Structures are given as C-alpha cells and as structure tokens.
Image (cartoon, rainbow, N blue to C red; front, side):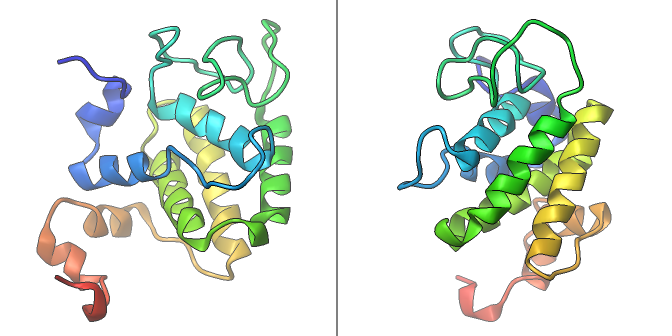
Length: 171
C-alpha cells in the first residue's frame, strides 16, 4: 500500500485519530502563507506526513526540503540544533493571532496536537506537541484530556464516542 502518511500514523492510530490528524492538515483560509499559523502547520505536517517532494520523513522543523506545504517552519539549515525554543516562539505568535483564525480550524488543530502529544513515536517530538497541546487548551481556559480519555473518545467505538458527544450533533 502506498500512502503519504508516516507509517506510525497508519500502524498505531485508530481510524478516528487518523481522521482528526487529516482534518487539520490544510489549515485556515485567509491567513498569510508565511505567517505563524502556516509555519506551525508546516511542522505539524512534517510530523505526520512524508514529504511528497522528498518522499521521506522530515524529522525537524528546520531541515531543508518539503516545498511550501511541508517546508521548514523557520530559516532552513543543515546545522543540527535544539528546535524547541524557536518553535515555542512560533506557537506564541500563533496564540497572539488566534482571534483572527476560524474557531473551527482551531479546534481541529488543538485535537490534532493532542494526538501528536500522546502518540508520536519520537519522545522529543511527542513532548513538544504535548506542551503545545497544553498551551492551546489553557489558552481557551479549559482542562486537557488524559490519554485514556482521548482513546475512549476517538477509539473507533461509536458508543464511546457518543458518550462525549452532544445529542444535538448525533445523526
């Protein structure tokens, strides 16, 4: 089977979790192509997709490659360095621009960040996404889900999903 998804996404995640990851890939319309939301999304895409141009995993937010869709989130370099601080800065810029983004997109992105924060196979990346998920949740004055709560809500079991869904949106 040929897929652009990284193998861990297909092999380790439920269908519902994979679906949530896919809903956040495109990003919101009406924001600058090189603004904080799009730069954050580039790193997000690198964490779940293979670069279509390079046909490989781009495992840092700064390495060359990826074109404009999965390109670097900040000035590309071959110099190996700790990328967390520059990316934390981009998250801060993203949060400062949040009022200009569609709420619907923000919820998709928050839930996708949660999945990466609990499920990404690389501990450094998983830890960074978990802290980003916490920032996104706390910015909304909410409490985060535990991994167990996430797995129940998005575990491919309709009854478990219905337990956390509002009756107004059940079909």
